[in-house]
Amino acid sequence: MKQRLLFLGPPGAGKGTQASLLANKYSLNHFSTGDLLREEVAANSELGQQASEIMNKGELVSDELVLSIVESRLIGIEKGWLLDGFPRNIVQATALRALLDKISQPLQAVILIRIQDSILIERLLSRGREDDNENVIKHRLEVYRNQTAPLIEHYSSQGILKVIDGNADIELVSSCIEKELCTSI
Ligand code: AP5
Image (cartoon, rainbow, N blue to C red):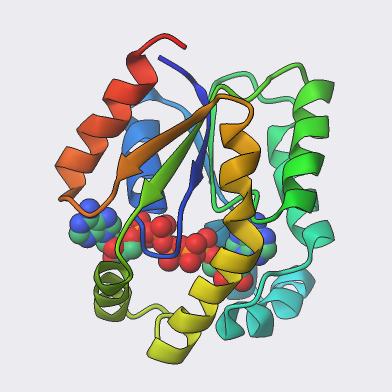
């Protein structure tokens, strides 16, 4: 199975849920930049203080800050890994490529989880995280469309994009992802 993966998709698509299931099943490292940032906020670190207000507005935290977090996790890593919520724009994708070249661990697949807006809004409102209110969700979706969605073409042109229907229940989505990852390129 492919073991160096990236999860892409709008807020509430199920990136974190699916990345976590796969990481547990195959003993892979799961790095969610959203979770890592929320840990910094909870610890009230300097980084967390810088990120908190931006996250609550649904904006992207600075590339520099996020890149430093990801780089510190990936350098020296031996087992496979899943990135969830990173990269979020072309600048981050370019920096990731350079980092992966440096550590000779090329990305093997990008899982794009597609989902209807009405379903993702319902999921996020019922979860109720601090940034899960109607106005912030709308803004996160706009940010996704403007800044993150261009990555779909970016990875599709590299021939490593796998598109998954995220509207179904968790188990079904999960088995579709595994099927895609177990087929040879
Ligand atoms: P982040 O934490 O990455 O949030 P997000 O992309 O908006 O993603 P979510 O966690 O909301 O959704 P998800 O797709 O992971 O779905 P999940 O599995 O959780 O980022 C938060 C903020 O941090 C950003 O706005 C930004 O400020 C900052 N940030 C993070 N990364 C950054 C970066 N690289 N650069 C700059 N800033 C960055 O599921 C959602 C809910 O749905 C859950 O309750 C789950 O149980 C449920 N669910 C999941 N799948 C299903 C299913 N199939 N059926 C029913 N329910 C489901």
